[in-house]
Image (tube, rainbow, N blue to C red):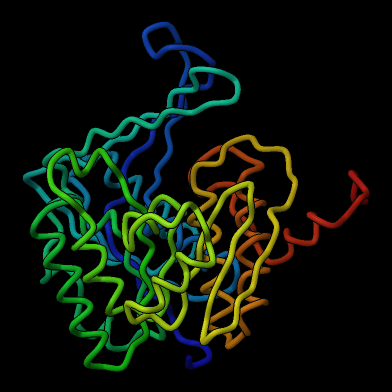
Length: 318
């Protein structure tokens, strides 16, 4: 992979309402506003790790849309935002029903982000990228969004730009139909595929949770690299017959939402810089762990200097 250059991401970023109290939404009174979306989270994670990133997406002509664009730009990501006058910015709500569990509710039917279409992503931005990252969420939003994904893949392949794919399955987007074939279609065209264990089995069939078998089956589809994200049980990556594994780092977990995106950002940051598989997995693991220690989809993602805090035993820096 070419050193330097930017990573291109695209998809829906929504406004976020996060309850600050534990309890049912019918009973809590206080909440905080924010923003979040898998693709922009990865872009922000990359930017914080020193890798230029570009994000493309649609928002509504409303205050929530303006906040989405402002937040992403404010993190140093180059933004190509399409303001849709005919649809609202999507909304997600985080409910903390117990101190240790979070439920995320999505209000995105007919949202501006779901109306993404092929012409929204500038062809030159795809051709000029060092890497293009695609999410299964984007491909699942609507038929026009799926066509946008295919169009970007066509352009990237023709230009020789490497592609990564995070399955990132959302059951709420597949109340009917089987997403497996769509995911396999994208995976076959990607150089790197990221998946959780359940997502990998959705992609290549049951394997009793065996990460090594799942990674090998994913590579058999065509990708050079398969990365299995397994939460607190660590991760495994396979590339060219080489297998690397990393145990999860033990950290105090405040909010795990967005940790998978931080993991992907860490892996891609190392890969764009030309690092080997083991180094990519190491940075991914550290980035994902750091993101768990704060609230918000992207606010707690690490900057490069922050990662030293994971091994610093002194709680006070003077």
